[in-house]
Structures are given as C-alpha cells and as structure tokens.
Amino acid sequence: MDLETYAANIDGEYIQVLKLIDNLYKYATPQMPLKNILDYLGTNYSFIGLALYRKSSYTYTLVKSTGLLDYENSTEVVQSIYDCLDNEQTGIVYPHADMQPFKDFYFKFSEAKKFYDYVGSNPPKTQNIAVRQSKAPPPPNHIKVNAPKFKKITIGDVIKAKQHEGAISPNDYQRITMLYDYFTPHQAGCLIAGLHPAFDGSDDDLELALGVIEGGVKKERLTLDNDGQLNSDDLKSFLRSKGWVMTGFNDNLASDTSSLNKENSFYQKRVAELEKQVAGAEAEIVKLKNELKERPTAIDEDLKDVPHQSYRTVDRIMYAMAKISELSNTGPYSQNNPSLNASIATILQNDGLTLEYQAIGKWLTRVKNVQPMK
Image 1: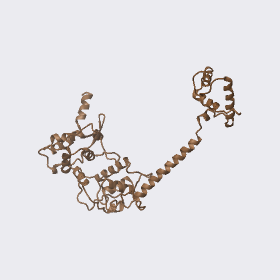
Image 2: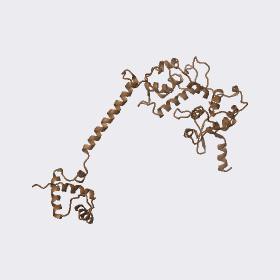
Image 3: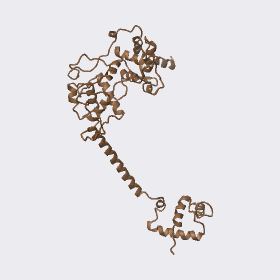
C-alpha cells in the first residue's frame, strides 16, 4: 500500500461534522430545513457520547474536555452550527465565516452514519439507541439528590431552555454558593450546574457551564483578578445577559447605569471605571508636558557641547564672519549661489565636514537676527 492509499483509507474512516449535517437534508424524509432536522434529532435522539475528533494534517485527535476550549464535545459543536443556520437553510455554505470555526471537526463515519437512518422514512426506535451514562459520583457529592432520574441534555433541550421564561429556583447548594463575593471559574460552573462548589467528579452539565464561563473570559465580558477569581457582581450581570436568572441571585439587578442613585452598584462601578480612566489620562498629560519641557530644541541639540552663556558670543562672531565674506544671508536656508548657506555647505563638503543645509540655515537665521548696536 502506498502513502496516498494509506492516507485515503484514514480519511475514509472519518466524516467532517459540517458535511454530515449538510448531507442530512438529502437523507431526510420529508425534506425540510436543516434547523428543523437538527431540532428533531436533538429532541428524539442525541449527539452526546459521539466521539469528536479534530483534524490536523493527516492526524485525527480525539477532543477531550479540559474547560479551556471553545468546543469540547459533539453537542457543543452541533449546537453552535445550529445557531449559525437560518430558518430556511437546506445546506451548509462552507466558505461562510460562521462555518470556519467548525471545519476541522470530524466524527467517525461508522458512528455518525446512524443519523442518516434517524431522519429516513423508517427510523430506528429511540429505546434501541445506546446512551452514554454520566460519570458523576453518587450523592451526597452530586447535587441531584432529590431530582428526577438524570436526563441527558439534547439539542432540543437546549433550544427549549432558551425559550424558558422566569427565574430558576435555587437548590440547597446554590443557596449557599450564591452568597460568595468571589468565584473561581469552577465554582461559577458548579453554581450554574447546581453542584456543590467543591464538586470534583465528571458531570455533563458542569462541562457545558464551564464552557460558558470560559467563553465569557475569552470575550472579556468576565475578568479574572490576580487570584484567578470572578467578582460576584460581574458574574451576576454576565449570566443575566445570557438569560440565566436565579431567584435571589441575579433576578433583581438594577439595569439603569445612568441613574444617579448612589446605592446602584452598577452606577458605582461605572463611575469608578471612568474615574480610573480620567486619572490615567491626567497622569499621561502631566508626563507628556514634563517630557516636552525637558526636550531640547533642534538648535540646542546642535550646540549641546557649547555652554549656554556662549550662544550670544558665537552669534556675534558668526555675524562678523558673514559680513567679512560679503555673501548674501537674506535667505539663511537658500542653496542658490552665491548665498552664504550654499558657500558654507560647499566648503565643509570639500573638507570632508559635510553638514546639512538645514543645520547651517538654523545658525544663519540666528546670525540674521543679530541686531547691531547703534
């Protein structure tokens, strides 16, 4: 087997996520926009448990959840592609900028081809589909002590969650955690997922929550302090902007930052930010003014080895020499013969002491300004 055949065989084992979704329309019965098809798959089946790979050159690397990447599992990638589609789209526009972040993600074709069957005329029964079980440890470490049987999150669940109105009621762990003044990213993720803030197991909700927090930090909507923690007020407003509202945590935030109410925390924070910017600008102005005072003029640079008290003496000596030369100094910067500037430049150049006419002109201007005593 030659290298080309070997590489082709490897590529044949995988299918690009974008291509898989693009092909769904062809296999669907009846055919409908891709967004509707994905909604159907997310509601009745699941992308969870489908291994996600990233291609680099000829290598396909399994994507693992680290909390540091934008997309760390199949559900996140499919959901993000879903969000980029319009309601009428029946195919993927590959060159579109929205699709570029997903072009290197792949599934194993042997595992992903089942989705073609799911959208066909005779899809398999849902109960025959193998579902990956959560690796989260049992209570009391896991918050879902009194919750119903753990339900996997699907594309349909996420879409329905976006349509949810009203604040979330906190559980026991969240009631305590929401009192924190500062959160580590992990604690913030546990708050969203409804877990103990020191939870150290594997949980699907926590993985999704950490992705939200990481995205906020990357977009600079959340700021980590020197201790790597998030300010509670910042976290409250950030989660509220995402539509995640919890009773007693961020359901009654003041949103009018233009109000003059001094008790408004948003107003106070904004004022503090502006005052800091003004102080920085004022300090920069003072610094520039001091630099301007200390910056020597071009003439000072030319005379840096000549004591200041000798300037008048040098001016008068040069005035006398200019008169002796009987050359014109009406135009100190003139390079036309028989100007004094042109003659001086020529003499210096012939003697290997080249000097630019601008520098000569500056001195001859001083000479021109010497006023003889009457």
